Length: 131
Picture 1 (cartoon, rainbow, N blue to C red):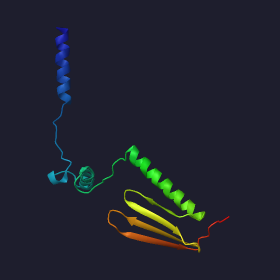
Picture 2: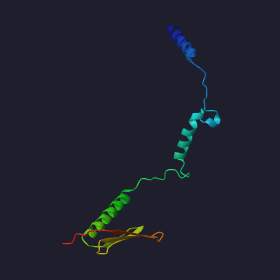
Picture 3: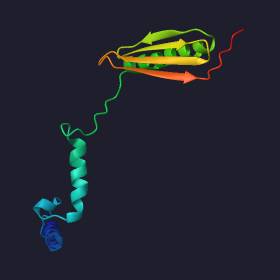
């Protein structure tokens, strides 16, 4: 009997603390706070794959290695120009040719293999170290 009394007392106390649930929408279109609008739209745009949002994707190990190797080879090619050597490097997208004219001028030709567009960069005043 004592246990039943405690249960009844417990449920009565819990009933006194209960309150009505009130739904408050977050979206201002449905009656929510207008200050939530910019936050909600920026989250929606960040999650939308078709809106031209962030198209960044993690590069694979092979892509990182290839990029690093291409950078290293291009750096070596540019260092070789200081010694009077010229050369070229071809990647999947570009063909880069470096030519030293021997008169302190350097010509770098970059050919985009996808569009066939070419850019020539001329540098004058280069001093090559010849032994």
